[in-house]
Image 1 (tube, rainbow, N blue to C red):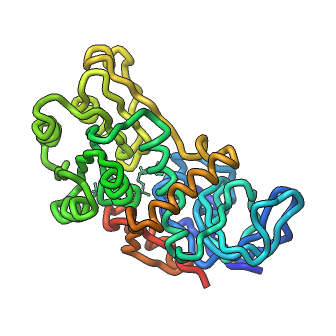
Image 2: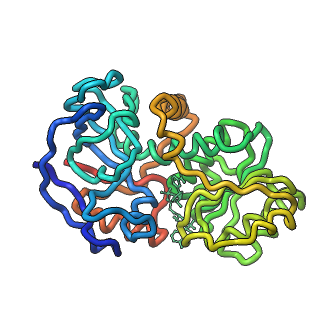
Length: 325
Ligand code: NDP
């Protein structure tokens, strides 16, 4: 029996239940992993609240790290005793141990701790695809990145610096802006200020940025379009403030033949080889010191509701891990 967090109904953090569950052996293509830590991500909030509906009851959590206990038939890249980390569907990482598909579970290099592994996989592979697999971004290009002091944000600031990309961040307080600057943002604007769009444009000499990476959603979408140069690209990849309402495609023509895409990590890592290559790229960035994993908050498994309250309340910065055991 292992301790597992489940929800039986969508709603607030009060919906979490800590239950004892049996974990069986892995079937073909699966592994059983015993967690040392798991990650906290905003997608967990969407799944808990019902913005991204799930069949209930369901276990929760999308990211973890630990030791492989058993592998099913056909699994070649992992063996019992291996250290491993993952970001993966289906949800179920908030637990002591689980059986799950092996394809997205990656060997964790010895130099990286379980907590780093649990904190970096979902956010780090997201940063990898944003900068390398979504639209061509060259050294010297400018990127506007919203919520730059958050989990994905602080990794993006450092990743951009390591690639010579000029990242302009936004954040909800001056202290958060300073944190983004400390992690490599070239500039950071407090977007609670009503003229944040004008401030971004001023930083580009009025031209507009090449790319916007926007996971804040509803509150920033229109302003993000106004920050782009003609032919620029908006990558809308999340909804921390709420989903983007339907909009008129002709707006893109009127604002300068803009492009918009709405990607998700899970399309990128669906293929086993691609997922492993993205993870290796991420591990190299972290092992080389180019990207540091900033674990700012830790919560024990039984207090995952408090972790959600902090994340939704904009009280966290950088990475948050859920400790197990
Ligand atoms: P963060 O640590 O970045 O937390 C979210 C941040 O969003 C907050 O700290 C806050 O920063 C900002 N924010 C702005 N408005 C609100 C609001 N109304 N309520 C709450 N927060 C708000 O979370 P993650 O690093 O886990 O994820 C960042 C974003 O990236 C999320 O939207 C997530 O869904 C998305 N994502 C998308 C993926 C994809 O593949 N599509 C994969 C991974 C993440 P501030 O106070 O500075 O405004």
